[in-house]
Length: 331
Image 1 (cartoon, helix red, strand yellow):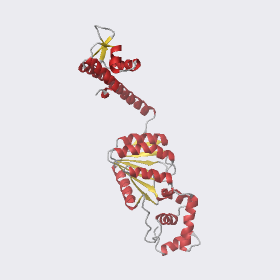
Image 2: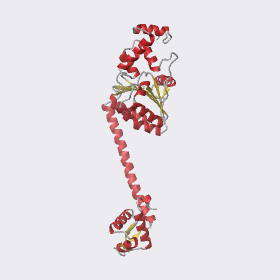
Image 3: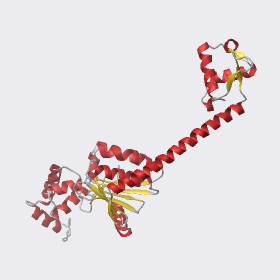
Image 4: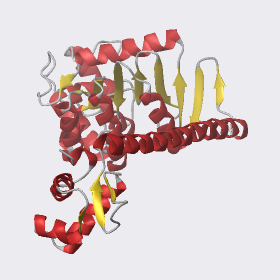
């Protein structure tokens, strides 16, 4: 009965004993309850703190059970007083936060033009994303290039992702096919999927990208180093284009847990993408970065393609790929 007040069975027994024996003293209560003195004193202290027991005015060595309605009302009044004080403290914190934010903006103004906000460094990027994500209502879409994700990035994203999915926000994430070889990244992606997130993979991704509710996008300022800085974009035309890009790649992507389909020429998607990039003059290092693999793996893929085409040079490989219909002439 009294557990809602944080009181245990011993306290309830003492309270009932005092109801049955008004003005009972310590010895009488110990005899009635078979409690040790320490146990009895502890229970009386707890009941006194909640104003449910007080010393008898007529017999100071005895105790009386206070009408619970009076005791509880006193407790409620005390709790309301504490709640009011806490609310006032929260308001003071909110006012202080606004004041500090104004100071921060005055000392370090964000570089922004119409619908564009510039962020510098990974810490500022993560802080801004954290603030923006708190306002998300319906959907987050993301490109996660670079192959295997770093432990630091996954650790930083985990609480945020979990909170979003718990709120019923739809999350769609595109990784590279190469993450299928990273146990840690696959484990993280599966964890996302188990919580309701949607994860697919593609052979390559153009940039790192996050789109929030179709009205805010975050893109890196340096494609080679996404931690260097980022732009927060809000222009309708830009967002429409980025959302269309995401949806286009999402439709062609392969759900994690399903093997990527080979193309009509029986080439694995990763090899087909590498062939297109090599034909466009990408170096092995550039191909490796776009595919999220090592330079050694990119060179192996190129060598395998040349062997399949029976070519002795990359130029000859491109010519034969066009002749076989693996590439269009304009690729």
